[in-house]
Length: 315
Image 1 (cartoon, helix red, strand yellow):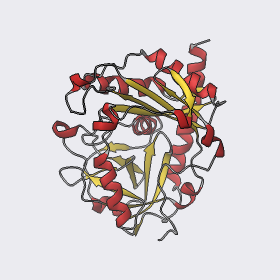
Image 2: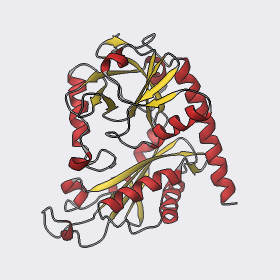
Image 3: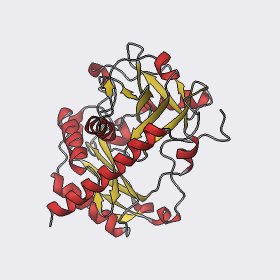
Image 4: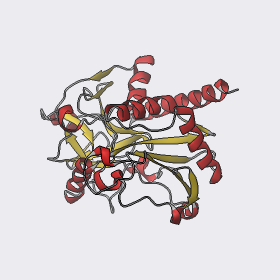
């Protein structure tokens, strides 16, 4: 199977409104062309920061608490003081969305770095003025073509590493590992890279968590070497709640190549079908298979339920 052009799980429908959005930067909501941080910022200089991606549905940030759990746990692990509580962050996101007239079909990239440094060197103590907090909220609807064509993956030599090197559970600004994997995949003629774990088992892609379907069962990696994705966990929970056999396990490319279906999970695209791996068609080789479609429907209902619960909780 071939495609006329590369695509990615983060392809969105073109929306000219994004040319003039306003962005939150350290307490101010400013026009896009004025949203800047210092070249001394630790995120720019060292990749020293954490981020979260969240989607806005009917005025609510889906699975907000799950995203905040991951963000605060990650920042605590690297001794990064966010300087804001959870509800303060929600207020930042809500004000930024409101400044752009957004209620739904919007995607946020919330970024927290250790802040501006006194000198251009590594030591964290040189970040003397507190964190840098930025929230970019864009009008964003996933490209419909992804569901029709699916993503082409290529297995790449770059791996997601061991927890004692750079823990893959950190949603850190330092994404060079994944950028290299993406480049390797594109140079192999694919859209994204399928990354193995240090033991050679199938793990994740450079941008999303990875699942396969075999004989009515849903498989994903053990989770030891991949991002602890919010959507990944929701899919696992949905399978368990709806009588779908699901396994977090080691499996090889042999099982992946022979899968009935494969799909990626992420906050932006929810569940994106995989069309081929290393040039080998998966299932019918296009679009979402029946299990992927079922999980997409269950997930859509779960999002609606979460949005309703958040709204009810605040009266």
